Length: 136
Image (cartoon, rainbow, N blue to C red):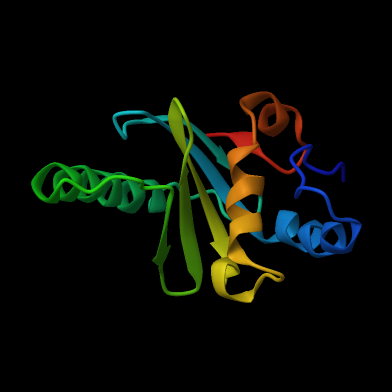
């Protein structure tokens, strides 16, 4: 299996830990800046895209709260599901959502900010060319 080209910044020690993350990713969704889903990628381990609806609703709630409470600075959100976690990261022109087995925000070391940075670096080309992911 080829590794995803996105990698954690500046540390060989953390690279080993990120190798395991790739295997725990069950799905990826790209949302436009308005929070509407654009692209879905699934894996053979989980072909469902039902989690995308939950992320869509969370992004809508975020927009509502930001407008009502004048909140700024949203960078990421994690939604704990039964056996998985949906992690969404805001980028400049879109959002990236990952469905990950377990709760990577709490279990990946050395710190969650590296996970957020790693997700922010994913590209459509990386996902489309990766043998683990299939367009839904």
